[in-house]
Image 1 (cartoon, one colour):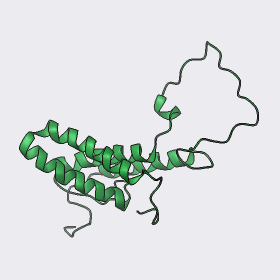
Image 2 (cartoon, rainbow, N blue to C red):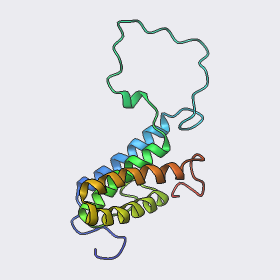
Image 3 (cartoon, helix red, strand yellow):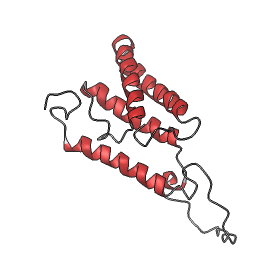
Image 4 (cartoon, rainbow, N blue to C red):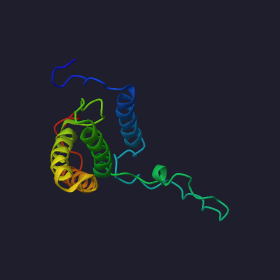
Length: 153
């Protein structure tokens, strides 16, 4: 469309599906987090759970059984989209990426820093910077729990 903030030329269905996928993962994590919200333990069960037998195989997917904090999820999504933006040279719509406005601001800062590092030190250094900056910024954003100001923040 050519206007700022609209869909970029050449946007593929894959990018939109990835954004929808991240949004669905976030929704599932939120729904499965328990009555007190993500990162908080569920209340103790009324009766003790039966002990696992030695023949019980370990979980096939450790990611499903372990809780992911809001900061870790933020860092993963921001790092992914930062690499996409850095490689394509254009920004997409933050909502189609599954990001909040605050996460999108982190992404823009990370990409700006990564561009400068990639020019001076190469792609590997930029890749390391993306991971480090996304983790640091998201940890700061979620250090006191979920930011207030509405779901878009």
